[in-house]
Image (cartoon, rainbow, N blue to C red; front, side, top):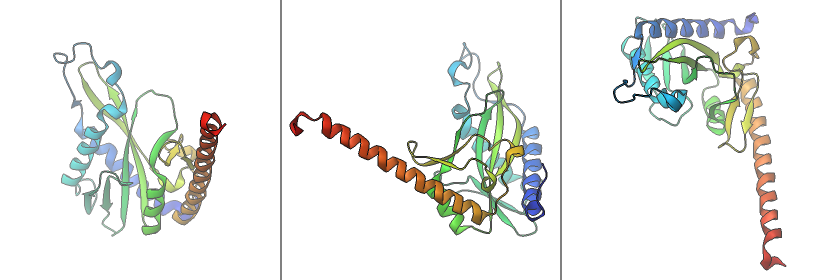
Length: 228
């Protein structure tokens, strides 16, 4: 990935974070989730990222918090809220502070349009932290027959570089992306440029939602026998 000079600093931080997280998960190793005694038929439909996501998030946050110096961080602090746009913040020895949103993906699955964060909360975050970076750290999960999982690798992607900025009007106004795990498709933007792009996407989503509501209301009124 060729990075323009004005974005080299962000990419250097991204690489440091990605390297640290990959070293960490190699040390964590297999994570026991269940066993074949209590689940004799294996994972079945439970072999999905959302099944184990909360456990993974906690394992990552706690290991980073405990061993932050070993992985090159000045500090690592978990988010106070479970419904915010990031899961932990970190500070590097140079004094810079950044934020990380933990995601999971199952090894071998096809790319899909996934939720990143609530669009309006993300917009508020960038307006409050315009000079700080927010990353999506995607941990690729592999499910094993012995009812353990392993974190195969971690991909770190700056949220402001997501190429397909789309807010779904029918899904709680979430920012969604199909390419947040593919750095070759990164669109280099400043936080300010991304904030403007996200604002426009939110406006489009709001208008679509309003038109849909008006259409449904009109259909209901048309079908109501009391209106005839």
